[in-house]
Image (cartoon, rainbow, N blue to C red):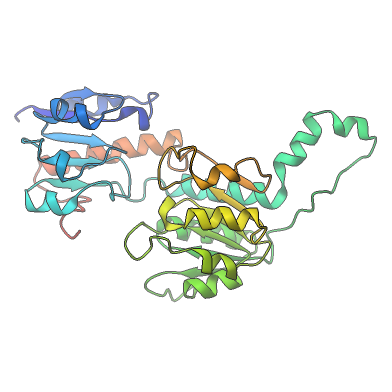
Length: 321
């Protein structure tokens, strides 16, 4: 088999604690921590296979990769790749569905638990020494609540949404969902009705023309004053300015977020106004990034390359997108 030139464009976003030698069997592997638009042509000109996570492979970049045969997306979402161009020019695109389900669900629930239990406030109270000085055996402010009996609304009922639904059910929550095709086993509602009824809303839907700003000023105004909103999908699924306004005005009870329309978000981003609030939990796009999760990701990418070389179709997204 002819040795292929494989280029990893942004290994830093996948992690420097991983062993990329899993790809050596396929060809000559060149690894870059990050790649700018200006650097792309020089790095991709001879590449047969490109592996990337965050780099935006749009037409203006792809036209410079004259030998490109396969793009391996180190993620499930592929909105950063011009799949239409790839399809029209015979470039295969493979993603990795389902690899991060457990980890994203884990962060979703961790955020909900932190916000509903006010854990940072309570742990800080003990660590500061205030608990010792108080002479009182316990502290019950700020008020916290049980998950049991709450209504948990899930926006997007794919692999991750399903996993979260299972966990929510185990906590004794009533689960409702908003999805394009109604499910028989879970009560499904339109987005406005879900926002009205849910105590907790977690967002797990892909970003597309239908879901961009799916939750905006109207939907936020429908939510309960103590509702907790969690976004681990894509930043632009929410109207970010409207969310910040709702948090600042007390129109929702808590907000957890791991994804942003611009990453990292700039100093002008509306979320900077709410960062320090105790009812806000923000993380730097880590939900997909558990060590075991990323090891699984590399293994699946290797399987995608192997299938492509063998002439098989595996996780190909350019075919129908």
